[in-house]
Length: 90
Image (cartoon, rainbow, N blue to C red; front, side):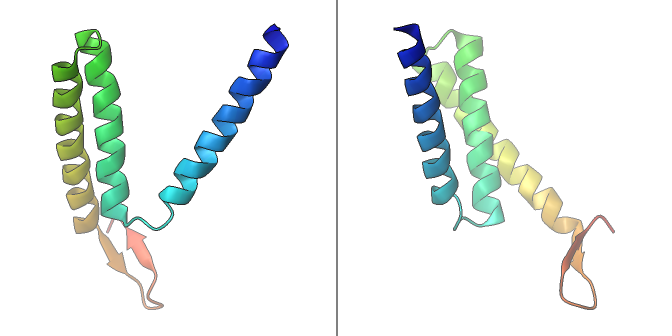
């Protein structure tokens, strides 16, 4: 019985990861960074507040703002080389 649940959990994990990966393939860098910030912020807010919806929402908002600020800082630091490739950190 326990082996079946482990197999199901593995299958669900693989399917979830592939669907999320496929869904994020067409996102821009900004969308990915803000989305990641929202996810991390929501989980952190839920852990800190004990799962209350207000704490989770506040964490998601703060995480989204943090992701946007990180993206803005990253974009300030890249430039293009002579072949048109993006290079970070001047």
